[in-house]
Length: 397
Image (tube, rainbow, N blue to C red; front, side):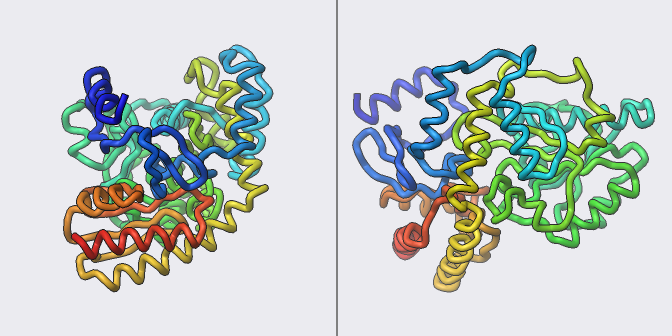
């Protein structure tokens, strides 16, 4: 079948919850994806910050193939070695103490919220605790994750969601402080807001919130689903601030394509929150998914991924700064490492579509921000190729 025939079949069978680009993928290799017609695309999307190691990494593929030949799933009634190894390695790179493996980032957020509510219940025997989240945040589409997502448009059709959620302004400590009461059990935010426009937390903000949580026995939940796993130059973005969350959510690049997530917590929270029967999952922590996590962590070290993020991320920042100076329609450039954005004073769909036509994959963050989240193996030459293409797009449109 040709491209149109495949797309027509998809539209006849799949629920239309995505406005997809008119591309059907065949394969990937390194920094490139190839459609079924053989066209080659430089990828600065990475499956929405998932494919950190690029496509067709042989060591990663071989590890998964070997595990498939052994066992894929056993359930959580039993132990399995890949889960034990993955948990050990995740603890080492994060400095957290306890891990619960999920199937996705949204599920990780769900578990984190449950843990916070249970912690507060055991603390004071009440069940009406508040959670403070941030305006313009994004934590997922499931009901709990949606409840703490700070975008009314995403939430309104599905209300009532879980109750007792308040919203404050990101990077505005007084706004957060004004929402705190004796009922507050947790404060949740992305260390770097992704969908909300690529806004990193300021050092002052995150340290002030951490101190407030310590003072009031409130749990700090940091969402590192998109910004974590090396994307900002450290394994997790919060490690650059000299703070530590009580609970952290992770997904996307920890599996580099295999659907897997996790929420991690300190020993204090683990001993005073979820216990046997409080939470569960059929597929979470299965041998295949945990083999992916374990191999990804090994390859990050072997391929010196963090060093590349710092060096190439700085180069990307310089080149995007130059582009922002060149075009008046670019109003701002912000981000960190290999998670950056250009804010424009016009909708960016035309730029993105023109880039796709020229063989470059980009996505937006909101209507007027172009997001740059390439695989973490990206080189300076790849950045140069991307800049050449997007420069031509801006010049044309």
